[in-house]
Length: 103
Image (cartoon, rainbow, N blue to C red; front, side, top):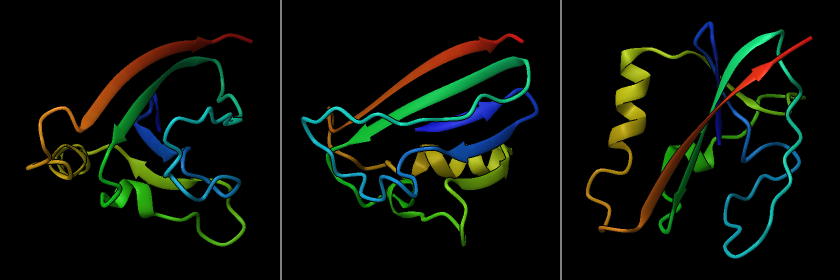
């Protein structure tokens, strides 16, 4: 699961330090994500039957809870899209949810 802030800052919020294994088939996973400052946030949910993507393998640095990817760039967006290229039809699912944080 990725969180993209209005500024473009992108964070992998799952898997995270508390849930380092992305393989959670047929399980409910609760992920606590601290809200950013007031404004819009986009959450992108990506699931795949093959866990080989770097999105599922990155680990937070040091004591961090999440993996920070920095600002979303065209290169990052392209890399995320192509990481599943060649996957069997129906083996990858993507959903998006935009939320607004209010003070």
